[in-house]
Length: 378
Image (cartoon, rainbow, N blue to C red):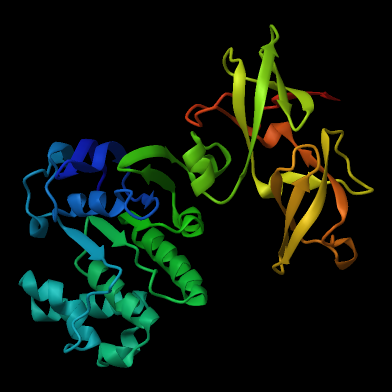
């Protein structure tokens, strides 16, 4: 278990920055995820930490030790790859024991540690089986056991679940999280799957084009995205274009979206075009028993998708012709809406995030009693 300090690290491929001036501190025992789309730099950063790549700029510290020039085999890292990288001609036991044999560990100690690792991943009863006779989930457990058996100070995992089917992926991510917490190994996990990152991580770094866009706890990057890219990449959201027309002495701005004006407290004096971002589950459809006071905006349902625990609606806003995504959870059968139903929706300003027109700057503080509930149609 070790603290990792990444300080101003850049990695180039020709003229392209695979990693662009990354700085992160990862605490001992933390489950830290690098999240982003394909080509964003997350795997490049992971491989630089592992010693497979050498950065052109910046420093990497394991604890107090700078490991810039330390070869990969001396970094005491366990790594789990997307492809498993299991030796097909070796048994399960031999695969897990491989790293210990390379380290010249005594035979009895190898046997003890291999069986201990196989017990942790629930494969001890299959120690003599060949990997070719095993499922994808079992092979991934072999790879995990092989990574932890060497007692690494740092565990690196590169898209470890992407080759598994959806149901098995859910189970494995839970098992990996439980095992990591039991062993208390500092872990850096790479994925492009937003739900996976939210489920397993203590903290997440969102990357795009080699740059770190935001670092935070799962609820922070989801509810308080620092820019439009993060808001759009983590889950789904509605972006509604509007304007700010004046701010009073208490920092309440006159925000106009969809021909409706209401007040939201903002963090700076700002006027002009904005982007109003609100999650589909935070948009509420007006019902007979609704407690919301407004603003309500008229629309028509143009698509409905029933997914069991939730219903996804696509709504055409009648004022502007724009589309809105709305998710409703645990809806009673007799409350399901139909295509062509006319509805009114509530865009709660206390659950919205305001960005400037470029989408790079947040103008309000999410969830901090930001609205003074003053609404009107314009």
